[in-house]
Length: 339
Image 1 (cartoon, rainbow, N blue to C red):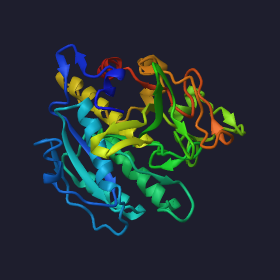
Image 2 (image 1 turned 60 degrees about the vertical axis):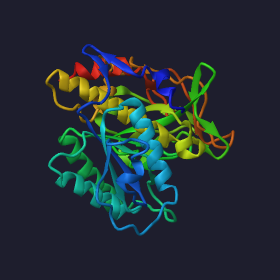
Image 3 (image 1 turned 90 degrees about the vertical axis):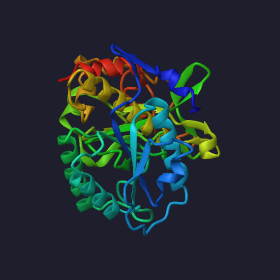
Image 4 (image 1 turned 120 degrees about the vertical axis):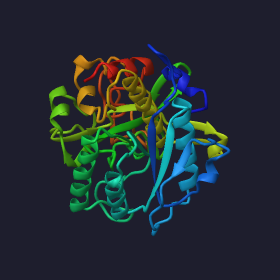
């Protein structure tokens, strides 16, 4: 993604009341494993960024600052007048849960949260999730949803695999694409690809079960009993001096969708309506128009090796790009019509 790539999705967005810029909207960027000061953002986004007090960091991510700057660049390319708060959590299960509790303690949390980190649902080695931790997280994310906060997260870059919190039932999960000329296809390269497939820990929500979706790939799933991701997608390819050149990953898709949801909330505010909150249930309901407001991803698969395991793209929903990438103006107006 370059600074002008949002144009491929219809940014800047003109609504019925003129250009939408994110004015009056509060957006949060959650990062793990580092801390950063507000003055470090001033050259990039003067006056638009504040930082919440960071947690004590026990696990350091050396890419923390570059990731946050990239997220911020993408968010502000979509919603240039949004106010952004950066939240620095420890890169552990405990840090994530404490951070969610802190957001719930806030009288005025952001209406949109962008999360460009994630870890395997189960297993040792890297920071991993316990059963109790995932249950606690799901309960807290449900509380945020009840306060009309939209949480947007990447699906990870491991191909036919699942990362949490991207697999949460309360999160808009974002896969990755790339442009080959005018064609948008599944993002995949040796060792990395758009994360997708079926969760092993999150049951399939009713709104997803009603849509009758299927993860088509190799090997074939015997049943679809759990949450499938992604829900949507956007470009995973970034070229920017902020990140020191080229970058690729689904972490670039999440802030683009977060910026778009901020524009949706701006439009709703113009109409006297509250922030939209969680959007998954209406997204999986064809009657809302949100599916039609997506560019379907019909080319490619998410193999990291050229062979299995992988899921393939297809018309409609698929386990590489979800319902697809945004037609921004159509998304805004479809969300604006919702109660």
